[in-house]
Amino acid sequence: MRIVAVSDTHRTHMEFTDTLESMGGDVLIHAGDSDCYDEKTAVTFLNWCKLVSKFYKYGMVLTFGNHDTWVAENLDEARELVEESNVHLLINEGVDLGIVTG
Image (cartoon, rainbow, N blue to C red; front, side):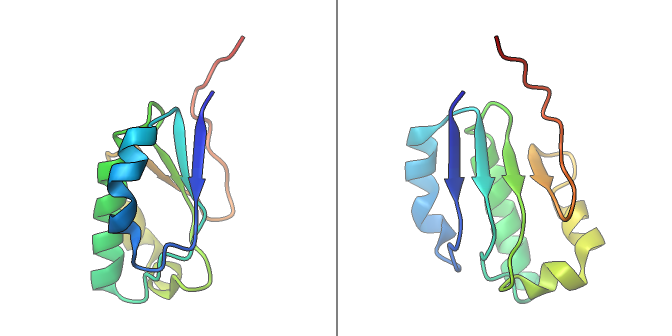
């Protein structure tokens, strides 16, 4: 299994698109601090997440950090933005990706 993990992209996430596409793998994890401090930055970032999640067999696991204040205050709206995508937005929870190994 190939897991790719990033964090602390602080609004530079677009710079990683080509690299993340070429790396590919089973799961991409973004562990927070994308700087989603308002609705505009959150929508831009979450749309990017939906794009790059397509490069990974089981999609993207996403959590937010202390610089992502808009998401913390608007969690339901953030979840709606990634509905019906392969982005798994986690806040104090887990997800079963259905991965079987062995």
